[in-house]
Length: 206
Image (cartoon, rainbow, N blue to C red; front, side, top):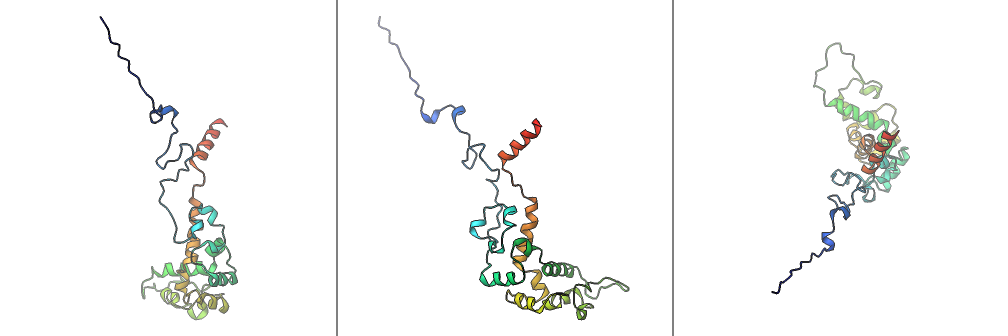
């Protein structure tokens, strides 16, 4: 009697390579271990920065010259340079911007004719004598020259940027962007997932 022997073959293709031999990848296609940890983040400030700077850390951007900010052309650069504002930190801490912003924010809490009798509250050292008795809302609508200590030359330069009043100065976008970048940078994680894991392992060994 002839007996037929059935032989089966299993062909292993590259696509069927054992999982242990495959490089682990994350959802973005990066090999596991090389991911930064920020692949799924959506955060961006693309309308405030030049294209080449959009992917950098805020903590790096914050130390740049103001030309990193989008929209600052030769004329704006000249104005800020003459005012002594060449870097993002300098722009963020421009004393007259910070003063104007404070006055503007407080004006939004002011009640018309709501001053309490006998109140001693004032901002006399912030504005010229003729503006000391005015309401905060009136002060904000005053020309920038009403600020104590600011020069006429500085006011003339600011006018080239469309800043005619204290309120305008409080809302100057380049100063606001710079201030926000500098402050937000304090809360930025700058180490990748791999660097953080290594740091944790080293702490366990120490």
